[in-house]
Length: 336
Image (cartoon, rainbow, N blue to C red; front, side):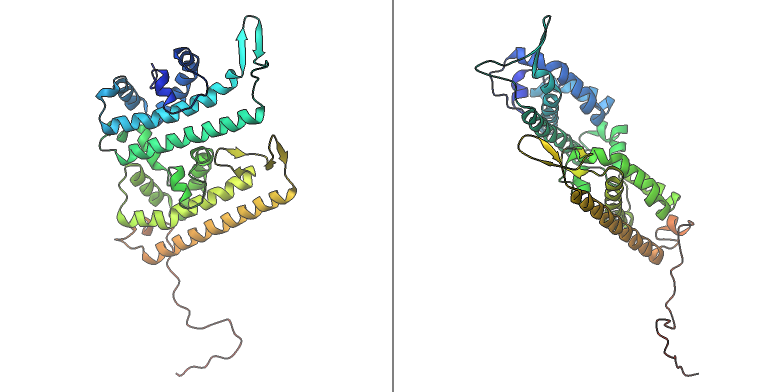
């Protein structure tokens, strides 16, 4: 049984223009179960998913927090189900083959209309998952089975763990789907850019504190002021350089295009040049944050502050002040 058990629950989150009954629910059920298994179970983790799924079968017995979580999950699930269901809904499959609906009263929608609907449902669905994660994270003392699960650890262990967090440093419009498309590059940039700058031991220390939500005050300040902005900008530079994509808030578009009212046309080469410029700017900004972080660490690290970094090969003794300027060829005079 799904987290949405009857059609009225579904209609609380998705509007269907025609009259709907339990036959509609039966038609939606295969996609409903598929989306729940693909998206809701991994988000909650197996143990908490089974626990919460059992509780959700009796909504009247849920407390306020449990009911709010159920509403967030149902909203995400209903919208993602529509994304999955729309393709099959355009045709009628029977023993006579596959037909489309087209008569004097109704006909199948244009492809651009279907695509717009799918983007709309997709945005709502994935952003619903983001809201559910944020709610779980802010109520982790109430949902202890989730807070101690591998799913929660996986959520916390990245330096940037959500679309909302990413958007604080580089605007992706809080789009969960965009963040998911970037997630592998976030991990790659952590390993290739952050770990060498921090040293492996200090990098691992920060990752463990993130995963267990135990960042020290000074490490938290370091992460928020330097690491996350560096990571966000370097990730975007990597993504633009590798993929040449535009941020639509719904997905990564591998081809730069200009949409019109009914289709999508290839853009002029100037847009690719603009993307290249944005990539170069993101790279420059990311590297600037890294340099500032290294300067801060090298100037403040000691045996009692950032001790793991201080004892690593990544630490560099700050350069002392220059006694003489070499910027001018004018003679320098001094008293002996």
